[in-house]
Image (cartoon, rainbow, N blue to C red; front, side, top):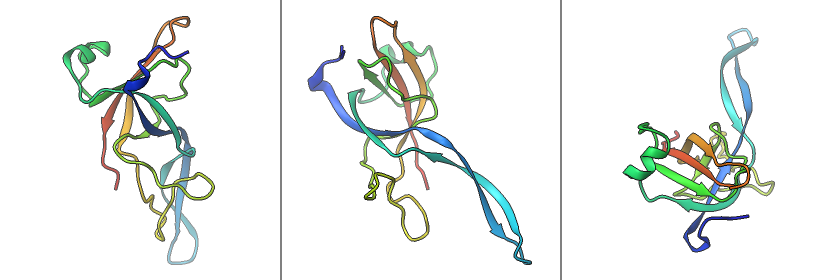
Length: 141
């Protein structure tokens, strides 16, 4: 049940963390050589919630004096799957392929990378049902 004002809701997209994948290349002898790892995410999902225009003093107190976030999302769904490992598209919309996965270019890079990450998630009481999410703007290259 939603306890937030419907007309203030804005659409956005989120993708949940799925795990890590090891990156390999071949050495001069043709043997596989691990060169690092990168995070992978599930397919993006669209959602609507109240998103603050910018951090304010009242909003800052919800998470204490921590100022490592730029905006706050408030949703009437206490059971939202968004957690501290999720990535978000707030100011942009992700380009998806026919399977709903993020579209990649010829080099394997995501065409529309996420523009926010989750810093903190605060869930309300079980019978009251709300979630407050502190987010930060990022630039993914």
